[in-house]
Length: 116
Length: 111
Image (cartoon, rainbow over all chains, first blue to last red; front, top):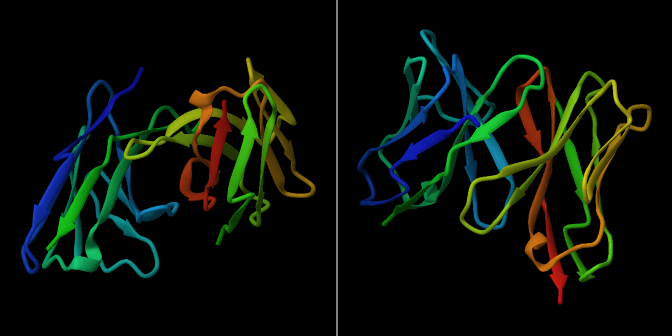
Protein backbone atom coordinates (compact mmCIF):
# COMPACT_ATOMS: atom_id res chain seq x y z
CA UNK A 1 0.00 0.00 0.00
CA UNK A 2 0.89 3.66 -0.22
CA UNK A 3 3.39 4.94 2.35
CA UNK A 4 3.88 8.42 3.73
CA UNK A 5 6.96 9.19 5.77
CA UNK A 6 7.77 12.11 8.03
CA UNK A 7 11.02 13.40 9.38
CA UNK A 8 11.98 13.98 12.11
CA UNK A 9 9.77 11.89 14.35
CA UNK A 10 10.67 13.98 17.38
CA UNK A 11 12.31 17.36 17.74
CA UNK A 12 13.07 19.57 20.67
CA UNK A 13 14.00 23.15 19.98
CA UNK A 14 14.51 26.36 21.88
CA UNK A 15 11.97 29.13 21.82
CA UNK A 16 12.58 31.53 18.94
CA UNK A 17 14.19 29.02 16.61
CA UNK A 18 12.70 27.49 13.45
CA UNK A 19 11.99 23.85 12.78
CA UNK A 20 11.44 22.13 9.45
CA UNK A 21 9.34 19.00 9.13
CA UNK A 22 9.39 16.91 5.97
CA UNK A 23 6.57 14.82 4.58
CA UNK A 24 7.28 12.39 1.75
CA UNK A 25 5.14 10.11 -0.33
CA UNK A 26 7.36 7.10 -0.89
CA UNK A 27 5.73 5.13 -3.67
CA UNK A 28 3.22 7.49 -5.22
CA UNK A 29 2.98 11.07 -6.37
CA UNK A 30 1.01 13.58 -4.35
CA UNK A 31 0.03 16.87 -5.89
CA UNK A 32 -1.77 17.66 -2.65
CA UNK A 33 -0.75 17.01 0.92
CA UNK A 34 -2.44 18.04 4.14
CA UNK A 35 -0.87 19.24 7.36
CA UNK A 36 -2.59 18.66 10.70
CA UNK A 37 -1.84 19.60 14.27
CA UNK A 38 -2.96 17.47 17.16
CA UNK A 39 -2.73 18.60 20.77
CA UNK A 40 -2.72 15.97 23.55
CA UNK A 41 -6.02 14.15 23.86
CA UNK A 42 -7.55 16.24 21.12
CA UNK A 43 -8.60 15.73 17.54
CA UNK A 44 -6.70 16.43 14.36
CA UNK A 45 -7.06 20.00 13.17
CA UNK A 46 -6.34 20.77 9.54
CA UNK A 47 -3.79 23.55 9.30
CA UNK A 48 -3.27 23.84 5.57
CA UNK A 49 -3.43 22.16 2.20
CA UNK A 50 -0.10 21.95 0.44
CA UNK A 51 -0.27 22.16 -3.35
CA UNK A 52 2.61 21.17 -5.58
CA UNK A 53 3.80 24.10 -7.64
CA UNK A 54 1.53 26.67 -6.03
CA UNK A 55 0.81 28.37 -2.74
CA UNK A 56 -0.58 26.47 0.18
CA UNK A 57 -4.12 27.06 1.32
CA UNK A 58 -4.34 27.85 5.01
CA UNK A 59 -7.27 27.23 7.31
CA UNK A 60 -8.81 30.11 9.16
CA UNK A 61 -6.77 31.12 12.17
CA UNK A 62 -3.52 29.57 10.97
CA UNK A 63 -0.74 32.11 10.45
CA UNK A 64 0.85 31.50 7.07
CA UNK A 65 3.92 33.54 7.97
CA UNK A 66 4.50 31.37 11.02
CA UNK A 67 3.82 27.99 9.41
CA UNK A 68 5.61 28.06 6.08
CA UNK A 69 4.67 25.32 3.67
CA UNK A 70 6.61 24.40 0.57
CA UNK A 71 5.55 21.65 -1.81
CA UNK A 72 8.64 21.50 -3.96
CA UNK A 73 8.03 18.24 -5.74
CA UNK A 74 5.37 15.60 -6.27
CA UNK A 75 6.74 13.58 -3.37
CA UNK A 76 7.82 16.17 -0.82
CA UNK A 77 6.10 18.82 1.26
CA UNK A 78 7.76 20.69 4.11
CA UNK A 79 6.31 22.57 7.06
CA UNK A 80 8.55 25.09 8.78
CA UNK A 81 7.50 26.39 12.15
CA UNK A 82 9.18 29.76 12.40
CA UNK A 83 10.08 31.51 15.64
CA UNK A 84 8.66 28.62 17.60
CA UNK A 85 7.14 29.18 21.02
CA UNK A 86 6.11 26.70 23.72
CA UNK A 87 2.47 26.93 22.62
CA UNK A 88 3.54 25.51 19.25
CA UNK A 89 4.46 22.26 20.96
CA UNK A 90 2.23 19.65 19.40
CA UNK A 91 2.02 16.55 17.25
CA UNK A 92 2.19 17.52 13.56
CA UNK A 93 0.91 14.97 11.05
CA UNK A 94 0.83 15.12 7.28
CA UNK A 95 -1.32 13.13 4.95
CA UNK A 96 -1.67 12.58 1.24
CA UNK A 97 -4.68 11.44 -0.74
CA UNK A 98 -4.36 8.40 -2.93
CA UNK A 99 -6.36 8.31 -6.12
CA UNK A 100 -9.38 10.36 -7.02
CA UNK A 101 -12.19 7.97 -6.40
CA UNK A 102 -12.23 6.86 -2.76
CA UNK A 103 -10.52 9.99 -1.41
CA UNK A 104 -8.57 7.79 0.96
CA UNK A 105 -5.79 9.52 2.84
CA UNK A 106 -2.57 8.01 4.06
CA UNK A 107 -1.09 9.60 7.16
CA UNK A 108 2.54 10.06 8.00
CA UNK A 109 3.79 8.81 11.37
CA UNK A 110 3.76 12.30 12.83
CA UNK A 111 6.36 14.63 14.34
CA UNK A 112 6.28 15.50 17.99
CA UNK A 113 7.58 19.04 18.45
CA UNK A 114 8.56 20.28 21.87
CA UNK A 115 9.56 23.91 22.22
CA UNK A 116 11.41 24.74 25.42
CA UNK B 1 -18.00 25.11 6.90
CA UNK B 2 -18.33 21.54 7.99
CA UNK B 3 -18.77 20.66 11.65
CA UNK B 4 -18.49 17.11 12.93
CA UNK B 5 -19.66 16.00 16.35
CA UNK B 6 -18.89 12.62 17.88
CA UNK B 7 -20.34 10.70 20.82
CA UNK B 8 -19.52 9.33 23.26
CA UNK B 9 -16.16 10.84 24.14
CA UNK B 10 -15.24 7.75 26.14
CA UNK B 11 -16.62 4.24 25.96
CA UNK B 12 -15.82 1.18 28.03
CA UNK B 13 -17.10 -2.24 27.05
CA UNK B 14 -16.44 -5.78 28.17
CA UNK B 15 -14.46 -7.99 25.82
CA UNK B 16 -16.84 -9.67 23.41
CA UNK B 17 -19.48 -6.97 23.62
CA UNK B 18 -20.31 -4.53 20.84
CA UNK B 19 -19.30 -0.88 20.67
CA UNK B 20 -21.11 1.86 18.78
CA UNK B 21 -19.78 5.34 18.09
CA UNK B 22 -21.94 7.99 16.44
CA UNK B 23 -21.08 11.09 14.45
CA UNK B 24 -23.14 13.88 12.99
CA UNK B 25 -22.09 16.32 10.29
CA UNK B 26 -23.47 19.62 9.12
CA UNK B 27 -22.54 19.96 5.44
CA UNK B 28 -25.04 18.09 3.31
CA UNK B 29 -22.53 18.21 0.44
CA UNK B 30 -20.02 15.99 2.28
CA UNK B 31 -19.77 12.71 0.42
CA UNK B 32 -17.05 10.65 2.06
CA UNK B 33 -16.96 9.52 5.69
CA UNK B 34 -13.91 7.62 6.96
CA UNK B 35 -13.22 6.22 10.40
CA UNK B 36 -9.72 6.19 11.82
CA UNK B 37 -8.16 4.32 14.74
CA UNK B 38 -5.30 6.00 16.51
CA UNK B 39 -3.14 4.39 19.14
CA UNK B 40 -1.16 6.56 21.51
CA UNK B 41 1.63 8.42 19.71
CA UNK B 42 0.87 6.73 16.40
CA UNK B 43 -0.59 7.84 13.10
CA UNK B 44 -4.33 7.52 12.45
CA UNK B 45 -5.13 4.40 10.48
CA UNK B 46 -8.15 4.03 8.27
CA UNK B 47 -10.34 1.17 9.43
CA UNK B 48 -13.42 1.63 7.29
CA UNK B 49 -15.04 4.28 5.14
CA UNK B 50 -18.32 4.92 3.42
CA UNK B 51 -19.42 7.08 0.54
CA UNK B 52 -22.64 9.00 0.36
CA UNK B 53 -24.19 6.71 -2.21
CA UNK B 54 -24.06 3.75 0.19
CA UNK B 55 -26.06 3.20 3.36
CA UNK B 56 -24.00 0.49 5.03
CA UNK B 57 -20.64 -1.18 4.70
CA UNK B 58 -19.17 -4.08 6.62
CA UNK B 59 -15.68 -5.48 6.98
CA UNK B 60 -15.50 -8.48 9.31
CA UNK B 61 -16.18 -7.17 12.84
CA UNK B 62 -16.46 -3.55 11.75
CA UNK B 63 -19.40 -1.87 10.08
CA UNK B 64 -20.41 1.67 9.26
CA UNK B 65 -23.91 2.98 8.60
CA UNK B 66 -24.83 6.28 7.02
CA UNK B 67 -28.10 8.20 7.19
CA UNK B 68 -27.80 11.05 4.72
CA UNK B 69 -31.15 12.54 5.56
CA UNK B 70 -30.32 12.85 9.23
CA UNK B 71 -26.65 13.58 8.48
CA UNK B 72 -25.24 11.04 10.83
CA UNK B 73 -23.08 7.96 10.53
CA UNK B 74 -22.05 5.33 13.01
CA UNK B 75 -19.24 2.88 13.62
CA UNK B 76 -20.13 -0.56 14.92
CA UNK B 77 -17.54 -2.94 16.31
CA UNK B 78 -18.73 -6.42 17.26
CA UNK B 79 -17.00 -9.04 19.39
CA UNK B 80 -14.62 -6.43 20.77
CA UNK B 81 -11.10 -7.44 21.73
CA UNK B 82 -8.56 -5.71 23.99
CA UNK B 83 -6.55 -4.70 20.93
CA UNK B 84 -9.52 -2.65 19.77
CA UNK B 85 -8.74 -0.23 22.60
CA UNK B 86 -7.71 3.08 21.03
CA UNK B 87 -9.06 6.49 20.09
CA UNK B 88 -11.43 6.46 17.15
CA UNK B 89 -12.05 9.48 14.95
CA UNK B 90 -14.75 10.00 12.38
CA UNK B 91 -14.32 12.50 9.59
CA UNK B 92 -16.30 14.08 6.80
CA UNK B 93 -15.13 15.55 3.54
CA UNK B 94 -16.41 16.79 0.26
CA UNK B 95 -14.53 15.05 -2.54
CA UNK B 96 -11.48 14.42 -0.39
CA UNK B 97 -10.79 18.03 0.42
CA UNK B 98 -10.75 19.76 3.79
CA UNK B 99 -11.23 16.73 5.99
CA UNK B 100 -12.98 17.69 9.22
CA UNK B 101 -12.48 15.30 12.10
CA UNK B 102 -14.71 14.59 15.04
CA UNK B 103 -13.30 15.12 18.55
CA UNK B 104 -12.63 11.43 19.03
CA UNK B 105 -13.85 8.56 21.19
CA UNK B 106 -11.57 6.75 23.59
CA UNK B 107 -12.61 3.09 23.53
CA UNK B 108 -11.49 0.79 26.30
CA UNK B 109 -12.15 -2.93 25.98
CA UNK B 110 -11.95 -4.56 29.37
CA UNK B 111 -10.74 -8.18 29.53
